[in-house]
Figure 1 (cartoon, rainbow over the protein chains, first blue to last red):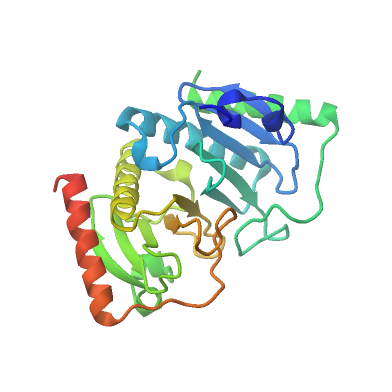
Figure 2: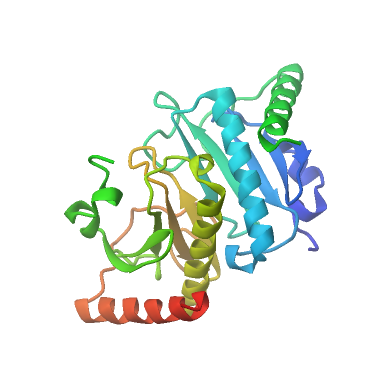
Length: 143
Length: 143
């Protein structure tokens, strides 16, 4: 859809997240701001606004992939809980924020926020973390 | 699970939400505080903490039902967008908050919050709204 940055996948998107991989129903992104260690986004390929606009096969496939991303994050980062959120009042292309939470980390016990001090990785560390996430996801999805 | 109020469905739960119906994979609740008009919770029957702990059939069924609840809410309340969130750092039984958002309503453009002034319905209005939600859900799910 015109002007949607999840459809365009342009510099507006790439300024805040780095592509991890393309799956059958979704694309996975790794947030540049790793204030919540392991934070990702899973974005549906198709531009739909609401959960009930997905076709059944699409919905099943999308949540299988979202579950696999959460599983990979859990294996790699060992969070105490994962939060899953779809907001999109303004950017309404259906995408799930996968936000690992840690008992001694930011926002424990409440909704995660985008405030607080940014935690940016070096380019080498970013590449390394994305590579291990790709490997783990492949193993979980059996691809 | 012991001490989980979504498993026990006791007065701790009923103090903040009213049961709407039992579906194949989930129970639906209507929030007493209707600050976000139409706000509901969909709670998985089984006590699992994370999305990737669900069986595939369970996950497909749960999100079919969650989508139906969102669809019913959209039909009845005409929100401008629906937010879907699973937090559960402290109450970790898998449940989705379905939070309708309105351009002129609370928290538009940002994550919903539980703060702000409560909006409680009269018992009659609460019963009426739950009845219409039950009817709409039945029609959508074809049950």
